[in-house]
Image 1: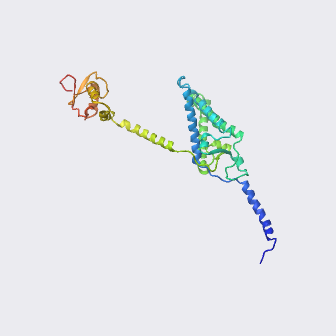
Image 2: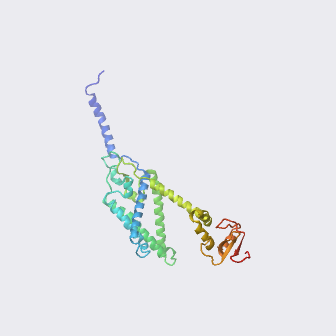
Image 3: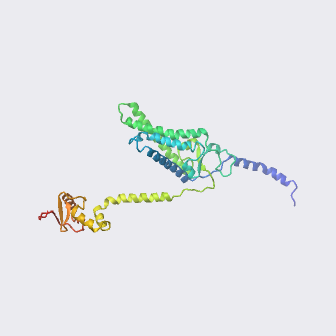
Length: 329
């Protein structure tokens, strides 16, 4: 049985409202995108490293100035560097150095949820001028004011002033504000690990979310330098742990045949003390090998070690005597 000629028209009229509702709901809702949490945390870490590098270069300019002059202006120096990074990155709609390396940019999440031209879910306008200004006020000015307030209160000893109740109350208020801020930051960290949005409270308050600049760009950071740095740090810590346990004199005695010629070693055997490496003021001789030592050096070594061996020839020292005297001591 063939369908009537107007069957497709009736089907089109019946399905048209459903298709229009689906299209409108698709345009109204933004695509949920997942931004790597590791990328966002690495970007913050790279921004800190960039600020530290700029600070190091700026401090070198004042190396010939009065020592300690920059220490009292360190909060101003940190705020100045943070302001420079903000001025030439966020204020001009460019990513910070860390965000650029991680292929990230800030997006106004308030407007992005209503953005209609959606293809990848990463579209959306950048931060507005008020958001940029408030970001600078909170991240640069807020940190500077709080660090200055902490240093001023510590210098004035507000926490120890029992006779000044107002200063004591201000000190308690500062400690409570700091505790509340740390607790809120911890809760925001848990929320960030769960949702992947807003690394800190400033971004959460301003609804400034980090999204990818290019959806097809891969992570472009090599970890070769980081791995090498970690290896050298672990190696240096191992040396700092083992060096106090080594006997430097015994190691020097083992390496001496490979580092000195015979003539210099024979001269050192007859002139200098092998422990302090100076000409003995009160020379004593180790028996039976007849090598010269300072009295204090050989006496303390024999008293501290029951079986002390000569540092020149590794012979056991059974007694000591003053040079030129036949009686053993």
